[in-house]
Image (tube, rainbow, N blue to C red; front, side):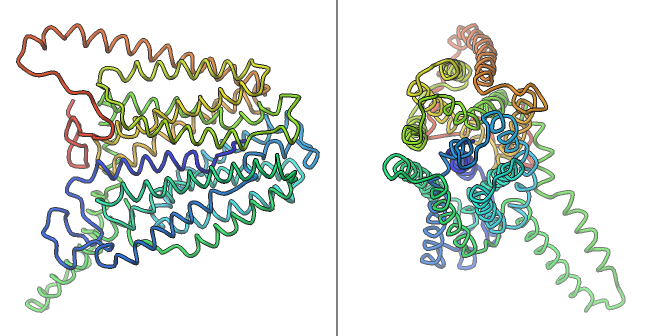
Length: 530
């Protein structure tokens, strides 16, 4: 169980989409079908320029929705609730039978949610997410059986898979020039909601002596309000893949129909409109953005930098989320943890603030990432491995709390760096697909590890043993990164005399906050150069 399940990936996905829009889109079309290089005409103006008040209010409403939907004071205390006398589940049931369902559900729903988000234009998926949140808290309020709690975890997986809809919704509201700023507003609203939610929940438990049942009722009220707000969101007119292609197809067919009508007037006996339209449709399917992006994925692995950070995303995020899923069960093992001495909410609030701080600091790091990426990843992964060993062996809950906060902070430090390193040389469509594939591969790996070590059909390890497994996992990753770093640094300094003999200046350090692509961005018509 995870206290900040809703916001953790929300924050990451916001960073992904923000990076996609910030660095991609060379020669793109705006929402009215006009190229960005064309002179600004009245019909080619973005919607926010035509009706500024309308879109400002839409953005404010979306941010308010993200804030409200993130307030669930009972979320940091779901595991203590399940282990309390109110639910009376055993620790073994929670560890080996209830929590693993979350990973399985997330893997099953992720791809359909990713495709439906774009195909249905965001809003229906946000409504589905809101309904799932309501179902979760109804089950926590009324459910008493094991199968009902497993269904609760299933719907948690649905909400996690649907988070991409909120992150990419803003793409349909504003033009590329405003996206980075607006995405930061939405991200801040979600993080602020998580922080307020964790603080409120902690105050209710520690000061107000509120029961878990009452805390679940309060959370149900907030998510119900969030569901109502999702129904009131404006329906976007475009999306990244399907609807953009559909609009283009509509324009092409309309142009063909108009041309054919003129030709028919000149030569009424000449038929063939149906053949022309079917040819256009078949040709459009072959040239669709989504299909071309799938074909372009094979070129991504040829870029060493993209390959490194994509692999980091898959393997390190897998271990990170497994820790988040099971850390509350680990905290419940401390015998002195009574209801008033449980500080899950406060710890989640502190870790959220540290994550924001480390993500902010990462934007000002100046380093030659093409040389030092592997070493930086190796050092941070080694620190995380040490923190996991400490969390799994310590007898002091405050040490465990502190190690968890630092563990999250180290991971969030690398997230924006990985996001921009991947996005800096890809177009926005291909970048979105790369992040989707990375997330899906990470989910498959989480599922395999869960099935082997946590599930009752596998080894069914207790939570302390699982954290030792996570320590070994991060330690192995550290060894791989260290070997890779040694190879890269050795090759660099071995070739350094040759570079010094030439007249070319040394490359400047890479600054995250001012990204420039080293090579021409990949697109459907521009393959990678190896």
